[in-house]
Length: 220
Length: 244
Image 1 (tube, one colour):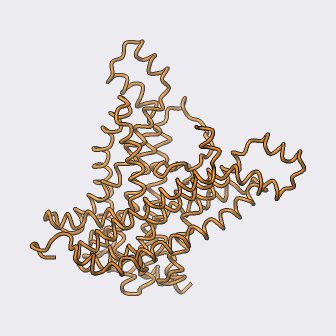
Image 2: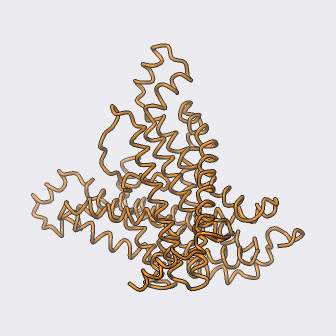
Image 3: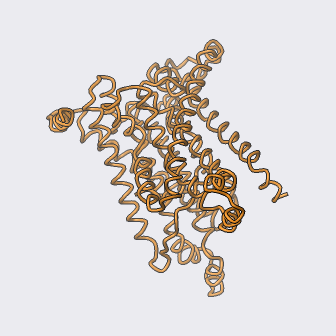
């Protein structure tokens, strides 16, 4: 980068809008895959925990351990097994969502008032009906709060996967920006990923309001 | 098995222990970056957190900071600081990484210090005031000792994040343990990638565990309790008590 070059080259941004859009789309896709798979695993595990409470401490301990490994290290630890691939990136991303989602899903179920469960049982609800019609709707605010945090965290971590060769907004920062000494690409990638995180955050707040209208009604 | 032998061979090779790109150089760089960033973060964040917590003014700042801190990816912070640092002639590598790490350390310390002081039982503070304590006295003898555990929890979060993120400094050529991972990927040397990752993971475990011990140590025995696990409710207010 030469000193007389402008800091942000708007013309580059305009000329590369297609490219930026594609990187953004890849970023969104990697995030969605990780959160969806992470949610499926966490939901299944949390049903096991609700049934067998003894599993709670070891499962939370194990997911906590995964969560404590720095992202670059976790990606790198997997490389000998699965190579510099999308699979490596997704396995690590999914494992980071587990602690957040598992804790919130279980906390959501735990927060369902005992009386409500008793009433449903008294009305003749079976275990699955109880889960789908009573416990899940009441646990929803806490579960969606978990999804919100997992998604925002994942958006940030996806950027780091550029270091293990994945294409997304992070590769604008690393490959197109830092390695090519081109600040414009760095800033586009950085602000793009921040913007995605904020959008995900705001989107989940809106979703939470829609899914739980009774919370609003009680407040109003 | 053969792979493990490769990793061990990598660790025992002489070039890993002497020379420009040896383990001591990069580990030293990693530790220097982390330590300076944590000290810098403390110098900025502690006074702000204490002031907001004690006066109750500007609490939106403490809460907003924690949300913003969580929303901005660490690689993005590094990416934003880097070109600015080049522009200001602060150079490559060390300076921009340090600035990014300090920025990362500030939010959890401010938020937790604020919360620590706010959550001190108001009766305790009133009792202190009734005994004739001045504001500074209250802060030093009541609010900070009672809130020490939460303050320390914030410092722990910051320390763990700083040590983990320092690895990313390798992207802009700062001396740190991330160097081995990135070089290993570039040269398709899986043993080196794995060895680098092991060192990063081990270092953050050591930091996590030592700060957890320190946190237990600063909590007065009369205040210790076994609070159950809490749900994550807000980005940036991620409780760290699930971590080993």
